[in-house]
Image 1 (cartoon, rainbow, N blue to C red):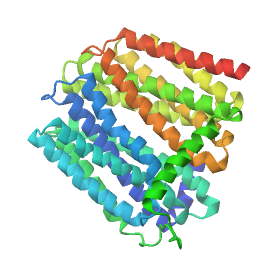
Image 2: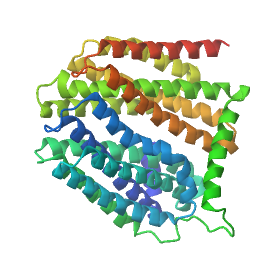
Image 3: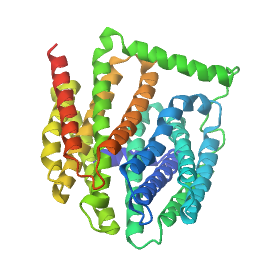
Length: 420
């Protein structure tokens, strides 16, 4: 296979291997940690789980990406990236261990959430640093290949870490704290691997003069506002429309994620272990949908065009989501997880393509920062809305129908746009 051949070429580069190892260990630790948090909030016998608690956990996991993300680059350009990987992962190992201690001690929820918030906030710096350091270890000829393979490998590592967390929990780990400590160990391994790279290798280069930190941060805000103004230009309507559609689809996905968590905890199972197994299967089916989306989208978007492919994805979700969701049964739930994983990721890939083509290069980074903010805020906002609508067992026909209507509105609006 071409992918295997490309990866073999890249793995001959020692410094790329080290950077990839840091990414795989860091993101597998992220997967372990996030699943441990989810199971602690949703499936711990000592917790009477509610949709509001799930929404709070999602806010802790995702809002740092939105709040810290646009400003991470300003600080990364001032720090040695090797040191960001070293100290960032060491800090996360310590904070994850502290989270485990708070779980064991049964500390107040706000202390637990503060600890988890710090772990996920540091993650934004590590992931951004890994992307920024890649051109320092791969030549220009192989950079596109590396940019395709590295994030994909990292996402697979995160899924694998989540699967490992489920396996450890179901195999009889005494508590979620033990799973969190596994994540802490992986963060520590990532920090140690970073020591294999030379201090100066990963950059950044030191400029002769650098603006003050305060000026750089306020400049970032101005740049983001300029990006919004650029997106509002009439000739960028296609990019703006795709971003709006993707934001709404992410909202739908977030609302249904909370519904699935509540169904797995209360609505469809009689024990926490059975609920964990069902949730693990649902995540696996959703991940399979993500994978299939990566395979079919290049062909489908090439034949139909990215905007029409978004219409197909939203329309498919509008039809199949209520058909599979309203029975509130295990088999249809897994099929729905696959469909929603496929349609959401396929629409995201198409949106990425539209933004890359329609937005001028000078504004592209700012627009993708804005995209990141919208993507995560929509997910957290959806969790908050779901918390208001869901009954304790998660069986809410009103939420399922509302989401289907939103999907249908997206398909109709984008169809109208293509006709114009």
